[in-house]
Length: 221
Image (cartoon, rainbow, N blue to C red):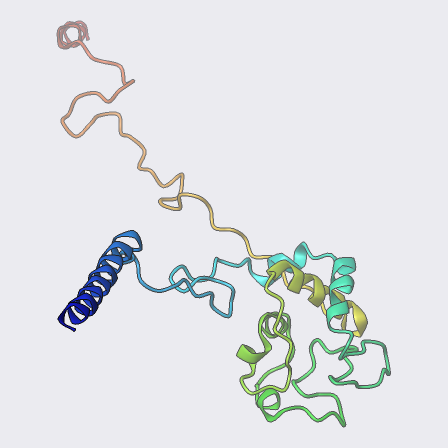
């Protein structure tokens, strides 16, 4: 009986020792280190990483100057599921967009706009339409518009140029001039050098005078 108990106890000890050994070995093999930088990069709604922020965007006037109406018409296919843009066209999920630019927000009679959009002051000018197409939910928080927006600034300008050609025909704003490189003192403001420097010596390029020759000339006069 004692021999059987000793055998059982031996096997139990052996099993515990084996489990402990396996635990130590697996810990050495699968050792996990602390990451150098915790967390994950999260992309913002504007498409820019949280720390870097969005890249600078050309003014809408400059993008409209380079806009392609044909490309805007092709991009408008993303909107055609909800909007018509023909004169006298019926409203769909969204209002008819014929001659929409320059009009107040919520201008189409009979269409049930959200209170969020109707409360936005001003008209659909080029800048407002650019913001709206970039992110309807940011432009009018609470809007019923579910479209995520167009992240490409030039694509938005192309669509706006196409919208403008459909009954609005507003004059395009003048492009903004880019700031000159190395802006500083304007050329031509430098002080002209005098013939004599501050020390009383002739400035560079001014003729020098021999004192002895000047005294000889004075005697002859």
